[in-house]
Image (cartoon, rainbow, N blue to C red):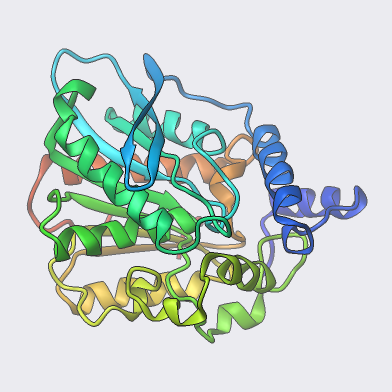
Length: 326
């Protein structure tokens, strides 16, 4: 397992400049560091015609959302996007460029959700806010220029967990019907003892220690991790869920959780496409300005979404790009 050349340069730079892992910081220090890192990662943007911020009344106060809308005379599909950050850091601002790209590439309205963060607001606060946002967006789809009959959920890292939980919760509680779920390097179990978690502990990247730290802050009680709405991989039933695209990196500590979830969905009769990017660690979408593979992954997500929005048939797997996927 060799590190992608772009990431070799990133690793060397971090090591030379004294990079500090988030899990060694206080929560506030980690939030500031994450915001600065994300802001510095992007100089490549796609621009939908409209981007604006709103709030709506959530279960515990106003929930901020950022809306991305391409120009269209017709209602567009709707993508609910949930940012990463281990449920502790991150915001609609840190996922801004990803959402701009997906809105432009997939020609859909994107609603990015600013759910509450732990440890101030532990599980299930993020889930409750996100599900409220899903219902709110479905109810107000026409006002957003969107089609409530074509809704998908997506997220990266902890946002991938949230997206998976949205699919489960919508199924369990007769929520808005979903066309697809896109889970990018998602943590899907609170304490899974996996090969990838044991193998990947490089302090220059998100690693097994990062995962443990974030989960410890997200779950006020470790027993809460037994809930399928915290650990979707532990759900007793994975049937009747929307078709899934799951992406992981070969060198990512939550890689095996993505593999196992794709297998669980397939066994339950859910169309599931799994892509594992060689030589990449966790978080590769965030460096798409420097990494062509990250930009390719965004376009692959857009292709998947467009196919799902246009058809209710079982999806055939999208062809893998030569040399990039396994």
